[in-house]
Length: 169
Image (cartoon, rainbow, N blue to C red; front, side, top):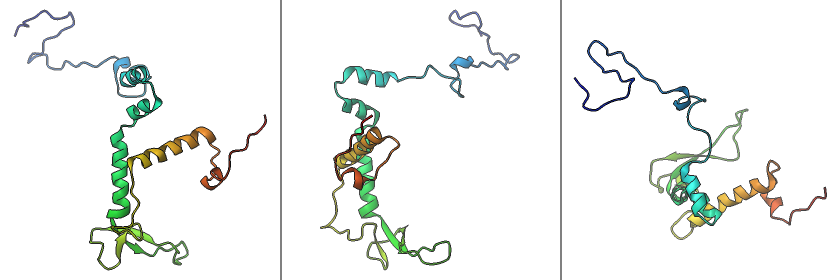
């Protein structure tokens, strides 16, 4: 079996007598393990987004696509208003009954005995509409809290009560 084109110098033809030829990439080009792969840094996709956009929101939606927020919205609605649960009593370590009941998901109709939705009064005329904008705003608040307070997390009740006090250094 002759090659139809010229090949580089280290080529070895695989034959019936010589079938144990193996090849491995160099350690720098091997992507398996902690030392392999290219240099760390942003991908070309992120670099292109950063060069072509004029707002931070475009970069944010490049990292977290809008479909992610649509999926969060749909799954939150399903969790609150569609899934059917049955409340069961829980026991504490001493064997006593806890005040809060545990909601166990079940596959049955909402009108089955003891079954209900996770939201207590969920019905066709009373429910909060969960929108994509609400999910985006919620994640933005989480990011903002992390940027403002770092590891010093105040409760939301205290945070929205008044303007933050400025400390003189």
